[in-house]
Length: 321
Ligand code: FAQ
Image 1 (tube, protein in one colour):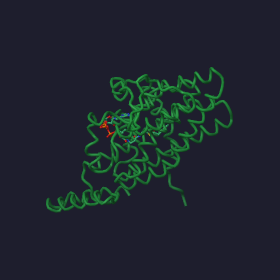
Image 2: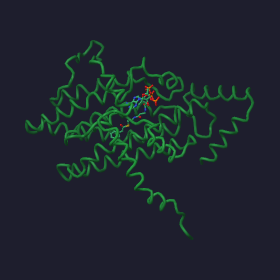
Image 3: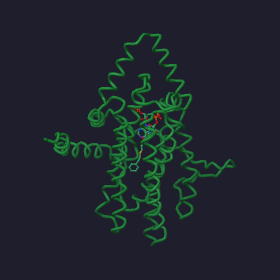
Image 4: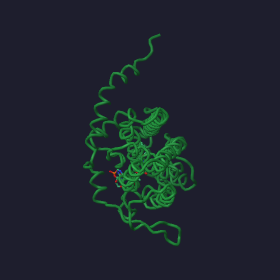
């Protein structure tokens, strides 16, 4: 598959300037007509590179995102909650695999993507650089982090690149379970003792802002948005998606007696909630590698990736006849 893509890419490089223009026109017509761009179709290098970056970062987020919750598997309070958490974390690993496979159709190998992650050249969602301190954090992560992820991913189901769009359809089906399992944990704790209620509120206090940061910088400070919207890679902007998430999450918090950790929340006449602004210094600090757990998350991934080398080697040995 990779060879075919590379050949297709180099074939396009041999074509004349005129035919490059025609190819670009055909590409733009497809995008405008809401047709999907497929791996063997011609695409501008900027489009390919944009997808290589975004899809691989998305894949890394799914896999690194297993770590905060993985920390609680052995300490889940019941067999039921342990089984659900295990299945949920396994789903996230699966999402990473769909996304790495989809990203490989762009002509870059999975080994290369992992190498960029380990070298610090590729990012992953900032939210996973915060620690999961109590069981209530399992509720907050499912409810808020998966809730934010799904708000973005529902929109990405309509992305212009075929393999990314199809991966999103499958991922969204699973993410909606994850959001509900997290909300169920929070709801149960709010029905419980005073200590449990305080634990749930504390988890919301710590995860609310990192969840809002997942949507990225304001549109006016987002250098990637313009091309992403032009090429229909992103279908809605960072701020638009963040507002959607805020609007649906605040009533969910109020329903179970939780208080949003922001004294400036106001419901406006247009039904949108107005909130305080995000602490962008903190956001960029975490994005640039200086959050509470950045070092730990990457070191953990590198350690277990290296320890798993024998599994990859064994799996790649062809079956002797
Ligand atoms: N964290 O110009 P923009 C999940 C970077 S999946 C880290 O706005 P763009 C499931 C950005 O990369 C969660 N970096 O960029 C789960 C860019 O840097 P670059 C992941 C961030 O691409 C749940 C720079 O800042 N979802 O959670 C962040 O247009 C529970 C400028 O930003 C996706 O990845 C951030 N929050 O918009 C798993 C969705 N925000 O690359 C386990 C797909 C921005 O130029 C447990 N991705 N940056 O060096 C996207 O929709 C977009 O890439 C955004 C950023 C919205 C993340």
